[in-house]
Length: 95
Image 1 (tube, helix red, strand yellow):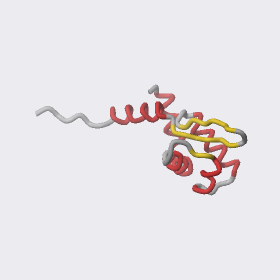
Image 2 (cartoon, one colour):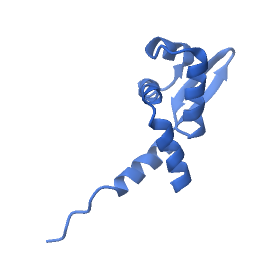
Image 3 (cartoon, one colour):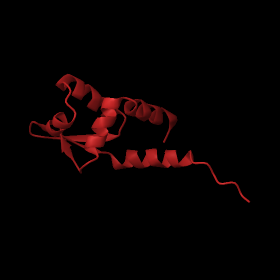
C-alpha cells in the first residue's frame, strides 16, 4: 500500500461516525443504506458525505439495485491495511 493511499484510508477511519459505519457494514456481506440509517441515525446528507469518504478511500464498495444502494467492505483494501499494520509489529530480538 502506498503512503498516499494509506493516508487517505487513515483519514477516512479517523472520524467516529465513519468508524461506526464501517463496523456496521462489516457485520454482513452487504448492507443497504436504509439499514445503516437505523444503526447510525444521522441525516441523509451526512450519511452520503461519510460514505463518499469511505468509498473514495477504497474501504467500501457500493452497488445500486433500483433505488437502493448496497455497501460492503472491500476485502482487498482491508487486506492491504492488515498487511501494513503487520509491518508495524516489533520483531522479536534474536537471543
